[in-house]
Length: 92
View (cartoon, rainbow, N blue to C red):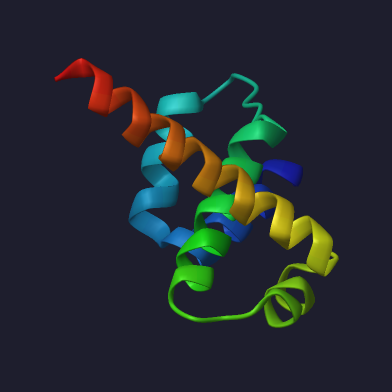
């Protein structure tokens, strides 16, 4: 019955047709979703919401993180953007 419960959870999230397709693709196998991928998408969402004006405290509550963790996520992204922009200056 475990497989059906997994199917039902997935179908509730993405719809029956999509869940059926996922099960057809991965039937009989084991699927592992690395934590790094999950964190990557979480961080993208945090950055998008931050750029739309949400503050550190609000985001921290939404994601059950500390305001400092939100600052770290956003500043890491901005540092990467600045580094990329600086590299582009030297490519010309």
